[in-house]
Structures are given as structure tokens and as C-alpha cells.
Image 1 (tube, rainbow, N blue to C red):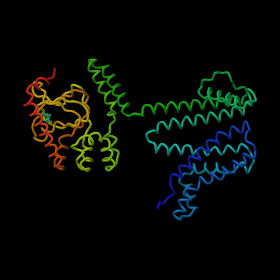
Image 2 (image 1 turned 120 degrees about the vertical axis):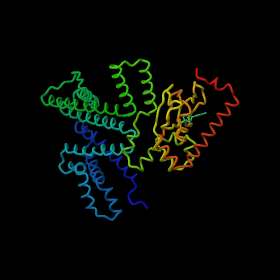
Image 3 (image 1 turned 45 degrees about the horizontal axis):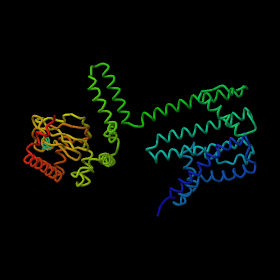
Image 4 (image 1 turned 90 degrees about the horizontal axis):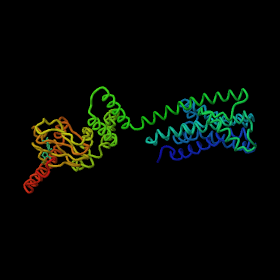
Length: 439
Ligand code: CMP
């Protein structure tokens, strides 16, 4: 049995209240100018609003408390302590002040309920993390529209019906003036005449500067922060550009560096995942790391068949590496410090004199012999295309082999199979090596 009220009901309720408060915030100010709502209509709307807004404050807390047999008064006390300011806004917007004082301007206090929009956006942002920045822009556009509407109503109140008796034309005219003033375009075809109108224009102009300053700041922020990999790419290109300013770097080399960064960015590898993982607690870190390295753990039969603990551990130890075409990963005779797993790309295994021994592709691994046997590299490895690799350094390699001997033997079997296959090809196709030699 659930121990609280089903959250879906609460979400639906909140959506309905938000829509009601938006509709009211549009129609009440407009009604002050055009008076299209009859007194009896307003009275019934006010009664409904009082009930619904009052329910909105207490109902969920009340239901949960009732469920747990707690005292309702405690719940009110708790609410006011937890969110004092918003609680006060909710209380004021729920009061039937117009019904008590019969003064139309008091209807505008219902607009305070718009704080519900902020609350909903906050929930939406947490729920749809991916679209958080889009929501910020949508939220901003909503408020801009709302403010423009209120300002237009205020302008109509000061100017009266300007063009005709047609309410719609009057409203469009006011909105047009308001937007041109807010955006500081100001065509000058509609101008303030009286002192109060001029003061009102000043208010709108100042708001315009603040609103657009805020908008530009936010948009720049969102655009530059949206994609950390792109940010990294731009910053790397800037570094390259300033380096070429002071040092002589041949244009061919410059292009190579640019292409490398472009590749890294397109593959979304430019984001420092390790840095991100550092901030997470150990358990979550293991899970996220496995998720981020899904491509390798799922692609490699060697990893697939291993137990979950091993997968978690190896995912944490593997480091992503990108190789550019023609790059020598290491040379025959070098000391072995790490081994590699090929996620994507093509690499040549070369013997002295550029003799092609084999081609490594997605799902292969290399560099394990020197680590297993503690001997120098038995061959040179050169990448032929852009390659996405994962490296495992010697220290971690020794640790894994010791802790998971079954993985070590699987790897040994695969190495032997590969070498046997290679010997078979070499014995049966004597021309192969000369054919395959790099031109
Ligand atoms: P290591 O000796 O550490 O460095 C060179 C690597 O090339 C070697 O490990 C193997 O992983 C790999 N290698 C050597 N010979 C072959 C071959 N015939 N086919 C595929 N890979 C090889």
C-alpha cells in the first residue's frame, strides 16, 4: 500500500492551477480596461478562485498528514516555516479581497498566484534535465509576453481608447507600442503626451534595458555552456590560433591539429568525463562509468562474458584515447607501459622494415604481449584512420590480471588464436606480406 497520495494526481492538479493562474493573469488586467466580464461573472469566478487557491495551499499536505494521522495545524506551521515567502504569496492570492472590499483593482492580487509557473518550471527542469536550458528560454519568453501584456494594459489605461471602439485594434496598438519601447526600437509613431504617460514610458524603457540585458546574458550563457565538448573545441582552437601567432607551426601541422580537435568534438569525446566522475559518490561513479563505457564493454566479447564486478572495475580503469591517421602508437622495441582496446578504427601491426603483419579493427586489442611477458614491444602499431581506443596502463593491467585470472586466461587464448591465425595466413599465402606492405 502506498504511504502517500499518488504523485500523478498532484502533478495534474498543479498543471490545472498553473493554467488557471495564467488565464486569470491575462484576463483580469484586460478586463480592467475593456470591462468584458460582467459583475456576476466576476463574482462567481472569485468564489471559485478562493476555493481552488485555498485548497491548493493545504490540500496535499493535509491529505498526506491525514494519511499519517498527523495534526493539520502542524502542517500549516511547517508550510509557513519551509517556504515563508511563497506561502505568503499563496495566502494573499487566495484571499477573496474583491468580494470583501468590492474594489476592482484588488482583483490584480490574484496575479500573485503566478508564482506557480516558477514552481512548475523548477519541477520540469529537474524532471527533463536534458531540456533544462530550453526551458529557461521558454520560461523567459513566457514572462516577457506576460509583462508586455500587462504593460500594454497599463498603457491603454493611461491613453484611453486611441484608435477606434474596436477593443482588439486598441490592444494590438498598445502591444505594438509596448514591444517597440521595451526593445528600445521606438519608431516614434506613437508617443507619450502627458507627464504620466512619459513617466510610464521611462519605466518601460528602463525595464527594457534590464530585460534585454538579462536575455542576452542568459542566451550567451546557454549557447556557450550547452555543449561542453563544443566549448572545449572552441577553446582548443583559440589556443592553437594564439600559439601559431607566436610560434612557427607549419599550416599542414595546424590542419592536423584542427582536424584532430574537430574529430574529438564530433565524437563528443572532448568532455572530461573523469573530472565529472570525480564529483560522484563511489557507487554512483561505478555505475556511470560503466554506462559511459558501454560501447567497449558491450562490443568486446572478452568483457561481455565477464562478471558484473569485473565490468564495473574495468570501466573505471579504462581511459579513452584518440589516434589520428598515420600516428605511430608505439614502435617495436619500445618499453610497454599500457595496452589498448580498439572501439573504432583501423590500425596496422608492422614488423621491422614496414612489413605488414596484421590489421586490427573494432573489437581487437593490442599491446598486451609486452605487459604479459615483460618484454619490449614485439611490433610497431600505426593507426590508419581516426581511432577510438581505450588504454589500460601497466599498473592497472597487473592489478586486473591478478584479481581476475579467468580474464587473463581468456585474453591469453585470444592472443594465441590471433597469432595462430596469422601464422596460418603467413604459411598459406606467402605473397601476403609483400602485397600488404604500405606504399
Ligand atoms: P606488444 O608486443 O606489447 O606490442 C605490439 C603488439 O602488436 C603486440 O603486443 C600484440 O598485441 C600486437 N601483435 C603482435 N603480432 C601481432 C599479429 N600477428 N597480429 C595482431 N597483432 C599482433
